[in-house]
Image (tube, rainbow, N blue to C red):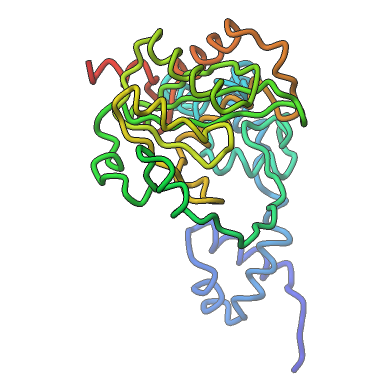
Length: 305
């Protein structure tokens, strides 16, 4: 089969038909050529004729440069606020903005994004035997026995608790407490990882801050081995997730990722005072959240009072 290159006349005809909104197959049918030829022409040549983003979206790019903050003003929040403030001005979609970043077309780079991609770690197939700890801890139940109404997230007081580690082999860590309904965050500085110390620390913090507790969900960390005692003092049930199933505490994990914007992995927890942790909680609880239609946690919490 003989192949011939597109002539300048054919290229001009393709440009005209495509600009009129015709599909590549319809254009190929009219010009009696293969639609794959038009596809290759469009991919190789047509991209060079696109409008420069710095010209078409110059107002948006300047706004993003002035207001973007990886900690509390994400790209989605900036786009939402830009559309409210500059109505009728060219504004790209969230997906288009991330594509510019991947292609290196704007000032932002991947290392400045809120979430960084990490290599997937290999998971082991070893599973804990839950029968033993079910017998030893009378107030502790496996997560499969958690009632369905807790899954609906329509009432406050159902908490998820996890620890945030600092440097390797460092005793200091953070305890994060998140409400499943409002996503409200509390952070506690823990000087040690000893299980009785952590249980007493959490109980004391909940009582002093008058946190409403109806149930507690946690993982299988050794520091939470006796948290059932705290649950018994509070008069609630403690539900433990399955091993290697962090998605069962999705709210906790996503909130911990927000905390990492202020305290990156590998940071020491020794020099992080409780006052600084309270400031982080206030910033996170005050930031607009897409899941709440860009309302803050405090706005959502006020609807339940």
